[in-house]
Length: 507
Image 1: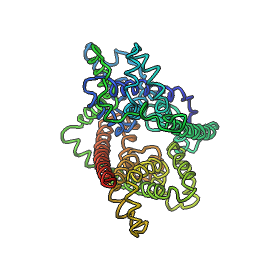
Image 2 (image 1 turned 45 degrees about the vertical axis):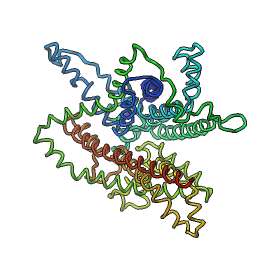
Image 3 (image 1 turned 90 degrees about the vertical axis):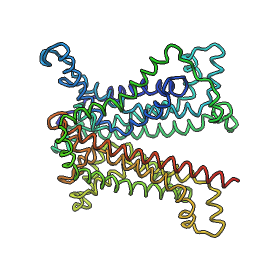
Image 4 (image 1 turned 180 degrees about the vertical axis):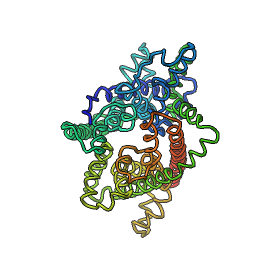
């Protein structure tokens, strides 16, 4: 076993990296005449479909000693890789901070861009007309309005960096999560590991409390002193925003576009390209043959993903419908969010202990993995279900109840047809989260019950990144990309149908 290092610099570094890349990207897309900004706005969130440990694999292939860039430099200089020293900075805390930072960029981008889209640009236009430079305008006008989403984005990235296992294990960074994994495999725990695990959970739950308060203060920050909305001054109507003048970048338009392209490529195009190149070395005949051998692992991924998503969404839907009917919803919501902030290794340790004492027969089944999936991802499923239910016009439900329809009948005839696509979208997103989960699945799976995520980890940890690991990663990305696309399509359908129903209800 090993004592975990002080990993705080890695988590702070990941947060800084995500903010430095994500915030300017969001501002350039939302506020300037950046060429191709619509393409960037569409592509930037797609990186969420790439699991961070897949990013880590791609960057090891690209940047490690003996990797693509090292060999390319050696070829250009006409020398061997042994003759050219190459830093191993991609491994350890530095590499983990970089990869987790790149993985956090889409989260920061979505939060900040969404806030900028809701904020009236005329305030910034007025500041610039008074002689303030774009930088001074951002510092004195835009930044105070973005304080809540900026803090929320930073906390989310920091939280994820704290609980991550896949990236730090593949990049050999020693943290509490990797120490716990070693303990579960060997039974040996350094004296500090248990205390560090408890301290980590306490810190994460404390950060969760802070994040919830930030969200509430952010929601209330747009209210005037008399409690009324100051929407005319701060929140923009989408029709009014169309007439605002974007900040002109002048001669910096194309350099800024290049920078935006590089940032987006770091988390999406570049890793996929690197993995596709590595997988292609299996050969035209070898790649389909290897993918055929992955069918059982794909089946395990589908079973666990579908089971975990179904239970989590059913639980989330039941709680979304029970709001206002019982005082237990608030503590239950808090419990779900606390589960979402648990490191997979710590949760796996708790579930192993529970199952062995209560239902030892279940230890050789997929039930513990499904339990972990529900605990980890019930919170986002609940949030998605709540959004779907709240989008249904209440006047239609009241009208149905007024005609003598039972509560169940109103749900079946009114709510379900309108919210159905959004609920299916939340199921698809939860499926993607469960399917890509690594730490809990790795520790709780029965013998021989590997998922695609586990196979990526196994192939990489055995002999370093090889073509098989890249091929599995590409298959997982195709699965997640398909699910992601379906969820976006369903979400669009749901939004359109609820909008139409709302218009008809108020005619």
